[in-house]
Image (cartoon, rainbow, N blue to C red):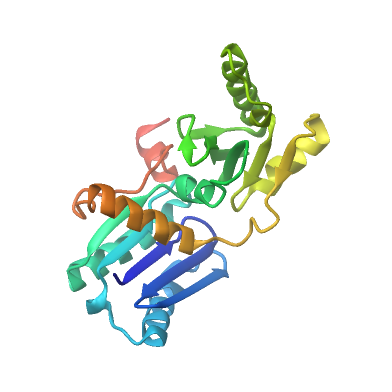
Length: 239
């Protein structure tokens, strides 16, 4: 299976390609220049692998939450490739795939994406299982939600000690980590030191697994995962 994975949910573009026995990946932190750089880099990886878009079997795209513009560009590009090549399409939540890198971690994993206005997109996971809704929270509310999760675990008869461990990851987890360090006490929290580097290879693997389990998404109805309204929607319709 030849699979292409695309993540444009943040200021970092991440692309992964599996073609025959080759695996090629690239991550570029270039600001919000996705429209200028995404297609040229996809083309470069395809040429490096010695295939063209017609040879793709599956395109996997992160659908958010994240940058409104970045998500639209990534998903539109993925749909265009799918329509032109006849390949299947799978959409994966950005938070799901960021947490999926740490399915081995014995504790709670929380990916963090800056939602601007001093708010953050996040969710809490354990062993690749999402334990909460997708959240749009302040830094203070982030830890309130974490403490609520701890209380739920403690109310159960069996409470594994490792559930008090928290691993922060994602492109903006350093902001939450600094808030914790400056305002709270939580010795069992660690930060992913490679958080600035997106990992479309994990996105690719998760997308392939979902395709095998449930098939692809309908490109006509697959849409970005927006947890809040865009600025344009707020101006037009209000909060």
